[in-house]
Image (cartoon, rainbow, N blue to C red; front, side, top):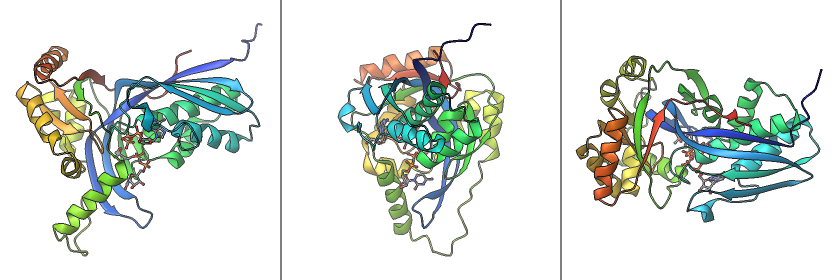
Length: 310
Ligand SMILES: C[C@](O)(CO)[C@H](O)COP(=O)(O)OP(=O)(O)OC[C@H]1O[C@@H](n2ccc(N)nc2=O)[C@H](O)[C@@H]1O
Ligand SMILES: Nc1ncnc2c1ncn2[C@@H]1O[C@H](COP(=O)(O)OP(=O)(O)OP(=O)(O)O)[C@@H](O)[C@H]1O
């Protein structure tokens, strides 16, 4: 019986995400808000290649705004590798190569996808053999979006967004993504939401904001009907993201005028996600947006979570 030589490198691909529904509840003392969200993993990927090394290093390529991606312990993929090494008692290091496609600070969980990919790649490279559940636990310690980047597909997230339950989504949904040149800081958008709610004079003893994903969202996903989904996609952070970046409103309206069924800000933004009726419809939206000087990406979902591709 021949044994496969231990791999000297592992290549993992992890998807970016859109929140097709995002309900934000009260802010807890730890600075996090209670969420009810529906994530969908889409075909815009981060690739992480892990190679054996004595200590820890990272290189990043692929998107224009690389200057805002740290290459030290602030990098989520580096934090993931070191967290796994300490949890496994692994004494060696790893050289991580990250090839990015998800816009940085774009509201699509790009860093979270890198962290998820690094966990899977290092676990395979080092042979630490962690279970999916254990990797999810480590992922949740790295960030609220990391467990979903491992899970993929379509899922309901509660708690901070890290407690996942799979949601059935039949068929395929076509999205046109309009990235911004400048990212948006997630904490800033959440803080803006809190400020807007305070300004609206929400009384402290208001009933807790409903933290259920509305049934129509789940029914639309089960039906696979984009027209139905277009009626129920919603993002509580959108008002705050539009406060920070008013021009995004125009992008959404332009997308709908170009034929998209609906448009929302993805997560904390600024990437705008335009839901389209079909692949052909998506291409039509892209060409009309280009006439307004707006470059866009045509992606689809749901797709798999972080997985080894070689
Ligand atoms: C906006 C979303 O992308 C929607 O999926 C996530 O809620 C954000 O996920 P993330 O970027 O992985 O968030 P983390 O890195 O865990 O936290 C970044 C910051 O976002 C805010 N944050 C995040 C998640 C959450 N449930 N409540 C929050 O208030 C907090 O200020 C936190 O310090
Ligand atoms: N591997 C990474 N890739 C991108 N940004 C990273 C990474 N590691 C750390 N960061 C830091 O995290 C910040 C947010 O990165 P990220 O691209 O994950 O935002 P995001 O897509 O909006 O995330 P989310 O949607 O989860 O809020 C960046 O501005 C950067 O400073």
